[in-house]
Length: 135
Length: 333
Image (cartoon, rainbow over all chains, first blue to last red; front, top):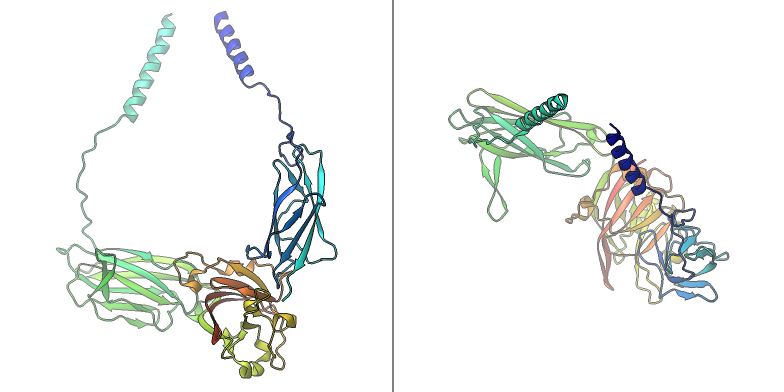
């Protein structure tokens, strides 16, 4: 009988060792991995219309020093219903998040999106200036 | 030790029993024996929403052993009488090696009386597949419709097969409307599902929802456009509106939504009633410019009575022929 107990205890111990806690990787409030990267910039920017077709005329001008994005959109673009698309440096995230159609119609008050670095210690706000192509 | 041996024996017995129960058996193949009674089967050949004025197609197969008898008649009864044009084929179809359907006349042309459509076989036939074309009547709009297929054989047997119920959509459809900026046929009425010229539009001013125009502007991409009369005049260059034409129709541009009923291409996307119900026009503009072939716009009329999807089948950009062919699905709210 003692022999069976000892085998049981050994198995239990082995199971505990196997299932023991590992060191957790840090995650932020969105469940995203916090890394050591400090890079913090926008590398490309697109604007899609309600039909998911690109509405910009020419490439968006991204100034990582001035933290601005300047983009000209086609004449007749419905500025109230646009899908912005950002490409960010590795491990970065955007604040606020892009969750769907966004209203860019208030040209006097350009929208600001903040890029947060992978280590979540650097925050860089980018201002998006939209110009509508004349007819 | 003796007890342990007993356990081992029981376990072995159980395992053996289990193996015996799930063990493989060799099954000899036997040719299936065909049923010797009249049989039938039906498939629905059309997919997507069932729309008033459109056709629902079925293929009705029936067969009896030649030694038992031959087919005498076939009948389809719809729960709601079909619109004129409803018929049951009097040809039985088979597929040729090249994939083409080929029909052989096996019966007299069908006779429709009320809800029933009947064909009487006039050739010795023991197996046939007849197609049934049901034209959805106005009376079925928003209701469900069911079908009972039945066949009789010369030995007195009858057999039947029920299909449905199928919900008939509330929406309307119209295809192949030719808009032309060259001839002035540019005024679209969603309520009438029609297009008008300027003179007619003036008499139906309260029904004009959109204006079609094509402009080749070098400084911007205007191209083909569907603009509501109340839109900013910057989107209506060169257009003088008839008196009273002033509605503001909300629009949402769409691309790559090639509805099967409208596009009539190989794509299997269907716009159904529920799609119109779920649209949100809250911040939609009242114009849509730079439209291309195979693009479309969702539309809501100014009075909120109708929603529609306008699909652009094709466009012509020539200076002498600025036109577009469109199809419309419309849903009354």
